[in-house]
Length: 390
Image (cartoon, rainbow, N blue to C red):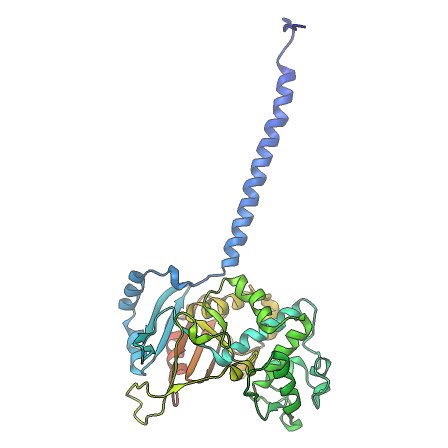
């Protein structure tokens, strides 16, 4: 049947059909754009101010070095061997490697070199534990006896006491042979020393963080390494970070640790190579068995300071400050405006200092130990010159 439009018929019915379709198209487009913006924002947020050595052009590095000769001269004056990274207001102002990563092979340190970070790892362990507390899987007030009932005096020692190293606990010995995490932790429990006179008195003792790593494992049912990889490494996209016992020496851009035992501090020598067994690395669970590059360490510590791993509120609780002096808590020393910490051993030294915004900081990583090391002094001097508040 052929229907023809009569003279009195208008186009109104057709327009009534088209308008809803047009509205749906417009609304759908807005929704798509909105979702894209949200997704992009989340993606950008997830990058967390990453400093990637791969993304820094050689020409940029050379320009930076020329514009900041004062840093190069200062580092040279103390025979600094390693990698130095300086960031001001989210911009790299200095990034350079000095000395040899392997003197015998003729390989030099560069911006991609990786180093053993030793006690700096405490700051990572503390944040991993605090994330579990944030998720209501533990409490700072939990006694260590809840997780390790055999520890003498454990009912009087809280997780917070251990984070602050005011627990009265210390270890007589460390296992030397390669073991599983569980074997290492049981060894510490069996050989731990407890002193009531040292309760609430600050004393650096790695066993506090060894056991806190064990607490993380007990709560999650996963290894410390697995927890770190899932919660931090993969999330931040860290490419030059891992565990020493996983063939550190065979990793690309690995370094050898050296110790200067000469009385002449003005001469750099590479005669004394320091070694570390897999057993020694395993025994430092949670307190010093990781390696990182300077870029990865800065990216991680900046992410922590920005509240990207745990909330800023929980970070403030973890890193409580003292009004009278720098206060050790959560693996770092906290001042009014900054965080800093260092770690050394087996020919390596690492030190970082960062403002509480996570936008300005200094990382010095060295594979050359010197007696009365000047690394902390140099890092503080550089930090003072780039501190955004000055």
